[in-house]
Length: 166
Image (cartoon, rainbow, N blue to C red; front, side, top):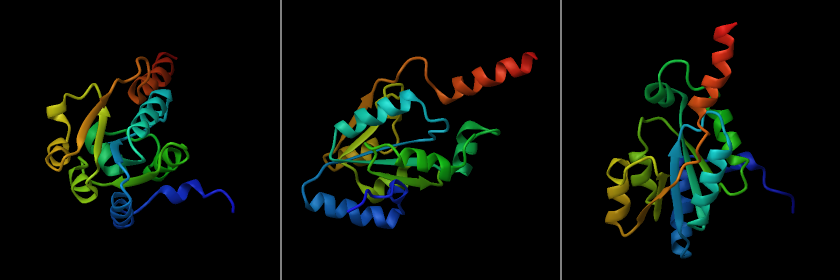
């Protein structure tokens, strides 16, 4: 029995809905987080590792290219959605990756109904999209401290600044 191809973790919403139903029936806890994950860095890895430690199964919803542009502005994303999804899927502690088109993951959260909604501690709980949906069905919202010194925006700035001076 060979190793599962990591890119098979990139799933459709319909597939994931079925899998979540099966996981719930088996008494497993599902964690969900979302983001752009434009340039994958150690801050992302530590955050996702912590998110996975909270549950039996971790779903990462990644913003599509059009929704990254809407959220972050022109010039973003650096990596296209398929590349960003593939890198997330390659992480052993990520169980499933879903690309979503909307500016917020609210629809996806309503469809998947995770037990634990995870965001960075830089988000106030009342600002976390879907928090009410998850809590209303007995789930919880967890905020994980972000790692200082790592952000895709800062990395881009560090690359671009010297080029602008030359």
